[in-house]
Image (cartoon, rainbow, N blue to C red; front, side, top):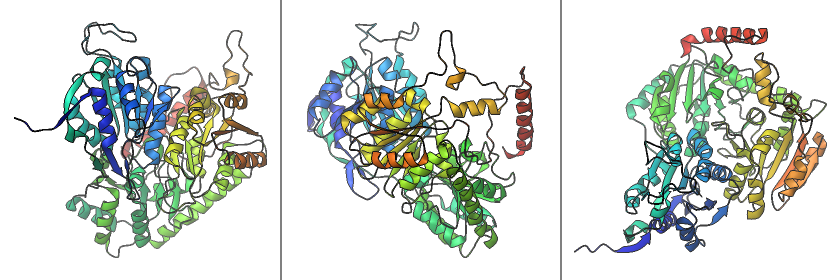
Length: 621
């Protein structure tokens, strides 16, 4: 006879009890809950089974109500980034549209390699009452539901059709959410009848379990090859990616750079980790980066990429590096380490750099090359200073400059789609300690609407300092409902809303490639009976959602309004009008789909330029 102790629980109760039992080790060594809370919008697919189970443990597992499923799931993504992937928020919805609203957030988590647990209600496993409310029916695949849409944007996907299946699947859920190489979103589809079914679960399944960030060591042979390649370089450039952030490896990066005179540049995900004024800091890399880092990248004979997936904005569609430059990549994910014929070192960034350093001996980069980093970066700083001091109406560069100047070392700035990421990444000057992660720019999936939802999640995760999110009028209109969620929950942040009259950065792309102004700026969107110059009163709208609101039209007024907004106890919104035609330009190229055939000569000329660059870079692929 088996002596295994069991407890009879529903599927939903067992899942929730398991969530409560999981612990994590934070960056500072403290223990905390791996799953610190749940974002929920209840419907007929989750309100009874999962909702009742969550109510039972509400004192240990807080539940936050969102206003839109996409928004609350985006808040969960931002929470994970703000905790360096050490904690994972859960988002749950009903079946049908509630679930599908979270597909976009899953895409954000997937593209950015961030942990997110989605628990989505599903149709009846028994199929007895089919078709139920919100069910989509597939004539030849009755087992397919709307939740199958999550397969393309999940690292791990499972549909639980029997309670006991949790015993096997939950360890896999924890593995994916905490693994540095496979980290990403997990989707669990829970049919609403199965949520309420009971089973005798092993009590041991709910014992406290501590999850530490894994630090896989690199292969010794790969390290030896990497050291040989580096020692043969005279003009190396170290590229700092998001993996350095999540590995907490900034100190090791700086130690290696200083010991061997290696200039470094930061990707979007690696920003603010290293001191802006360091003499080896070349600046941010790529289209949204700086002319300084791009200049060095084009002259480097070796690129040491640490913890980066080398996305096209960072590489300027693979035109920023010299054609004959060698690529050495250190990454926890071998998928990323082997890209573009790189010499791979597969392993944790911190441990790989620690074990690589002794193999380099007294090798140093060319002293003139080392000195060039500061020369180029100071020239770029002068460009940014000029943009911030320009007279006339407010620009994005000036907005970023004001927020940057008034922010402290513990503050956190956030952005996503549109033109502001370029201004944030290219112009922000980090003032925190080495390794301080004080920026979240969602430019992996470039998700409009992330900005306010993400600020809510980041504010939850960072009880000290001020979270500030910068967004355009287009992103505000696309997803602003979580501003009200933050008001209800009492989480404070500042949102600086820049109204430039439409989707200005896409209009810039459109017109810059020869196309006619069309359907991007409000003035170009007139329909039958429409009023093209009607602008939204963002201040009145934000006030109606319960936020404290300020307005500004000049640099001085913005500084005053932002200073006051930082002292508010809840969410505050600062609305400013900005120019739609002034941008910080890093001088990099980006490949976009210009038509081969067009009635417009301007488009044909843009296509000709595209073909020229393609021909020049054909040997770099």
